Length: 115
Image (cartoon, rainbow, N blue to C red):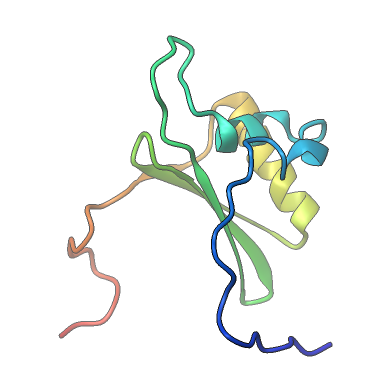
């Protein structure tokens, strides 16, 4: 099935209350949903929410859980979306995984194009 090209760009942003989009996943992936949605720390302090990026590369589904509050990310891969979500949930539940510290924007690190 071919993707239909959007006409006129993307629609404008609309406000969506926290939790609405992920309510159905809360039972299967409670740690991941909390990690993505939590806007406060347990002491009540404000927390920047995390993001999850999905991509397909070399026949694998890859996911990057970006912890914006702590400046690090966790990359995982799987042959299915369910497997990827289970892997992320497991890492969060156990408190493990190979978290990578995010480099400041513009920092050189060996990758990317050279000018």
